[in-house]
Image 1 (spheres, rainbow, N blue to C red):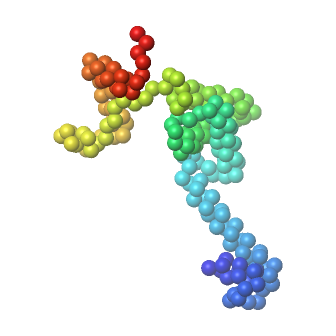
Image 2: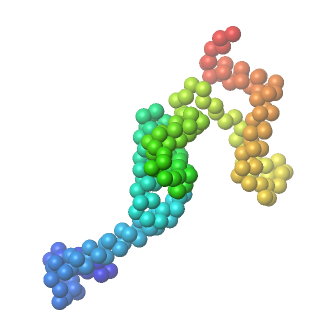
Image 3: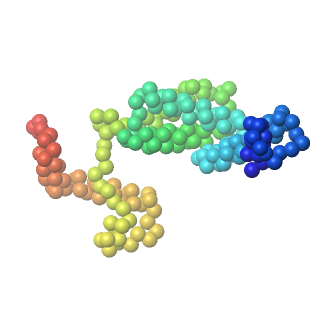
Length: 195
């Protein structure tokens, strides 16, 4: 509220602020805004997947984030058609790199080599939307489906759910039904069979 009152005074409008000069009002307003910005930055960095305790750590995280984003952009990295997925992935990678290297003495290691190798390894193991060898998930499974078929999901972790969906996918892809369904879907889609 004080900041709003000061701004009115600074802009020459009616204000309850009295007994200070415009320059003093500017300085007080700037101090309030600086504290608000600092609080916002602290709040944001507390949610990051990496401990950022000072200006150097924030700079290191930001540098890793930008370097990884640059390399990912140069390679046309898009794990899905959703830009938020790409951004979330890159942010997670920057957090991982920063955590792994929090105590690294960059006098002993070459930063650019390390960040490049880390990013290349991630890009090579993460599917890209435009990758001709990209694999697509074939089994969708959620807890509601399991309960609908009479299975208890109490204590079923997300990792367990993913493993169960993987088992279903593997079982289905190795079955005669998969072969039949694949041929039917390709025919309906209009995809030509080469052999």
